[in-house]
Image 1: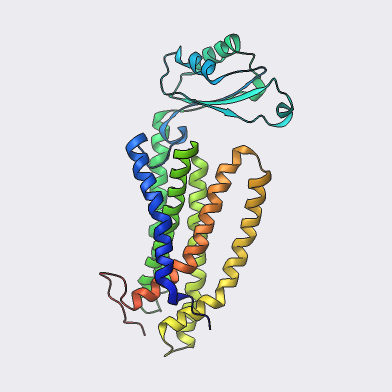
Image 2: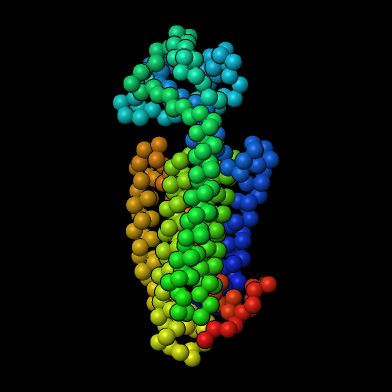
Length: 318
């Protein structure tokens, strides 16, 4: 029988090598821009202009128009035209993010852009506005949602595994794997934010909660088989029992995740620009979740049993 959990220290080292650069990026991002990841207007409040000109436009021209209205925090990014506009070389699309702008000023800015640069296509131009108060509420709700989800998952696993010795360990290991996935995803997002200006929005929160669900589900599948084998194979060494349970369920975990990976890969290759960032983060998170449930959560149980985790007492397994 191939012993997967025997190489647990190697898995823990690999996870550390993946997580540490992300933590460094989040620290650097916090120092430079004030938050671990680059936040969109969904969280900090502001205005997001999606502009399509029926003619040529430059970044400096657009920035000058916004600056004339007293705005200072201006981020201008050119977008690739879509649909019929992609075949028209006289069409240009831009995204402008700035601090919160009142509706009256918004209309004045659009009129100035139309007069000074090129005619705006009203059908392809939109403005999204979130007040700073709403942005703060979204941030608070996101933090509370993660904390509540963590507490509920821990209580559920402890209750479901109450007939197994050291039931708390199963919940703690599942939470540890979940935190691993959150750190990996946040770290990748922080790096992409620094390199390419990717911003965390409400869709990112959706992706994170989805990743949490998949990660915990995978861990519970293996843990449930360990619970069954604990009663079926009394007296068998715990490491052997855990490894057997992992081998019996690994094909199910991989098959389930591979189906999702194929779909997400297709969306990344052929989907629209507006959803690619969400799918990319979801892809990274689920890849991390698949790895952590197999190579972190389960080996952690064995490491805890053998007393290999500092400050945690091992043994006591029937």
